[in-house]
Length: 437
Image (tube, rainbow, N blue to C red; front, side):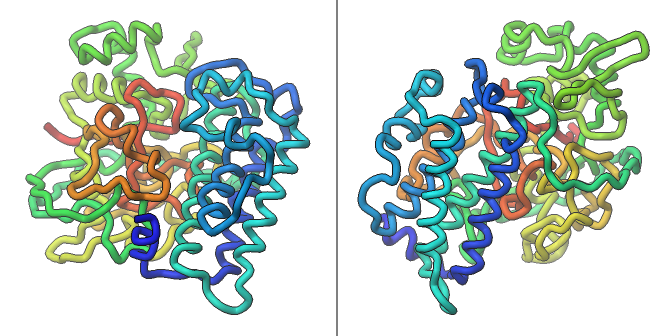
């Protein structure tokens, strides 16, 4: 079954190109922790955070299991790796008590795995097989996801921002108000079988009927969300679902998790410093429940993921579906806020060149966007994917996010990519846009 699934993909990439991708993902991972002293790699037990040494070992282990072993390697590069780094057999709470290698040992393991992967991808002037191409991309994108997790973990732990090469050019472009009209249509939701790489939960494009709707041109801003907070939004039960009110009460929050109030208004903690709340950047670090409550207060609603994907990718009077909001060309720093090119979100009016055909802005990058949809498989979903645990264990009780955030790698973000988190999570780089009711 594994061979059939992998051979279904009709694309190959040169080994040299895959080597560059693998090395780039690893370089970013190491850059995200390079400035942290050993004591900062020892973190308290808390939900949503992994011990950094465990997480570093896990991304290397993933390459070992889903690339090297599936391509024929026998045995492990590190004794005991399966007992330490298999995320579906090592419970979250147990990761703090494992006999992990020290920093030097973890980095050596990562380097040994990388060297073997790169050697396996040494194809001379030819291209890799479909199987090797697919598995190398799977492992690379998996590491990219953990790189984003390292980024928001630094925010959670109040560490300084990572030391990455970034742009300091100001983008104080202001708000972007108003809705756009999306006509009703039969729409193909999900990824096409001609897409170069897809995850299991994107398979496959299938017909859905979408009624006409109006969706905001941009995500909800800090200023707009502050109006909800200042109107007692976190204290007024009427705006919250039962589950949302329980989650709010358990958290004790009366405003977004990193906000701070002083005599002059709202501030926000940005990594290890507290700064004024930028009014026109999208609200970030809010849970699905907080987004839902805001919508109820504002007389709005969250888009379904079908509505979101249609607004991002459809073209009027055409069957063509765009891979990115602006078209089919790959993301660049002038089109979207991705790749940690800026260490945080920018104003919602920035990047007009990245608009969708309907005029929606920043549907990729800046902040992930919660949708109204629960995370379920598409019709015909089969659990025959090499990474069987990627989606199947999470169906039904997580919520779908779309679009990508400022720390998302551009090679991961596209119009059909489905992210998913539990609705109470407020530590991830998530905001939202709304629809008219």
